[in-house]
Amino acid sequence: MANNLQRIVSLSGHEDDRIWHISWSHNGKYLASCGEDKNILIWTNINEPGNWDPINPSDITIISKLNEAQTRTIRSCEWSSDSKLIASASFDGIVIIWETINNNYNNWEQVASLEGHENEVKSLSWSYDNRLIATCGRDKKIWIWENIYLANQVNNQSLSSYFSKQQPSYEYECVATLEGHTQDIKYITFHNQLNTLLFSCSYDDTIRIWQEDPDERNEWSCISILQGHTSTVWQLSINYQSNLLISCSDDKNLIIWMNNSNDWTDSDSNWLIVSKATNLHKFPIYSIDISKDYGYIATGGGDNTIIIGETK
Amino acid sequence: EIFEYIRNINDPEHPLTLEALNVVNVDNITVDDANNTVIVKFTPTIPHCSMATLIGLCIRIKLLRSLANRFKITVLIYPGSHQSELAINKQLNDKERVAAAIENNHLYEVVNKC
Figure 1 (cartoon, rainbow over the protein chains, first blue to last red):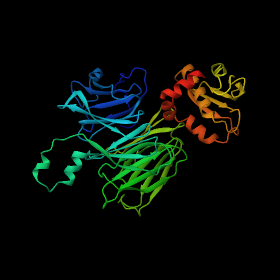
Figure 2 (cartoon, chains in turn green, blue; figure 1 turned 30 degrees about the vertical axis):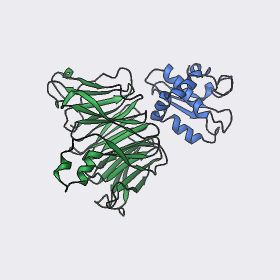
Figure 3 (tube, helix red, strand yellow; figure 1 turned 90 degrees about the vertical axis):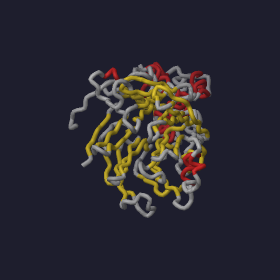
Figure 4 (cartoon, rainbow over the protein chains, first blue to last red; figure 1 turned 135 degrees about the vertical axis):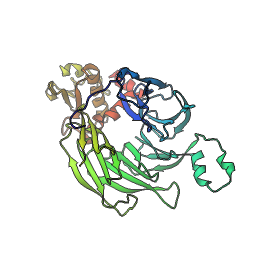
């Protein structure tokens, strides 16, 4: 890639309203965007889903609009790992789950509505097995929602086939609320492979790591508080293979953290700051992501700039 | 010029404009046209003024509506003029908090009256 990035296409669909979040489906074929207009748009290459660099850029187009579900800005939307469901988090305090009807991505229906947050929901994350959804927002709490059908599957693995004949359903219940952050929680993510580890970052300038008690289902506790930023931490990204956690903040810095053991669930292990990038952006850094396959880090800042760095 | 946009905002508590109350002053506005930045420092009427955040939000919204998109707006309490200066500055410059506040119907009405 070196120093040559070329824009493929600019997609317009949200009128003049702010777009707050975008999310790629895990199968690489679809892009979901959401924002101030209270809509989620699904984009794809209509001729060749998955090819994001077509000869004709206008092949990339909207195939579905998920609307009239939320009454305020949709701040975030995320795909389930099987690319069939999308959960959206809104300033209206509600999280809505949509499902494609018969695998047709032009057609979606609302299958669940998670209510409980006391005010704006800002971020959400699916566990790798889609059994859990973690949500966070201005009420300073992390809410954990469990899919009852999938929970029963886990519980009743050794029971008779009667249970396995239950229809998949989208009933969720709130199984835990995690308290600890002292301010608005901006972002949350599960570990990519473990549904027992959760990472959150906040307006309280800290990052917290939470773990589910191995002996007690749905009992979560905070196992680590990472302090180093001097203002709101907007986002973080993890690369467990390289043992790295990178965070970005309103303080205009990026911090690279490393765990001194390879077992992140070991509460005796420590997180240390290995590096701080202070001169990347002259404005708050709102977004950061690590591309595990290619060794790149991307950051987006309030200076209207995206910076791509290489990890060595 | 920025001063023109904000001088006539009405203080939510008193029937006077921010200019009349000396909450905003042309000397406390810094514009860097080349770098697209505008910084407004305002002085709440009293050091524990409970309306300070609201006034700051009004200033911010007025500027958002009046200025070209390219400008990055920073609204700050004039240093030393309020006891919760840091906390208020943080809220006023958190774009997500500001966006949610603007969208909040109740606040929207209050702000529009200013």
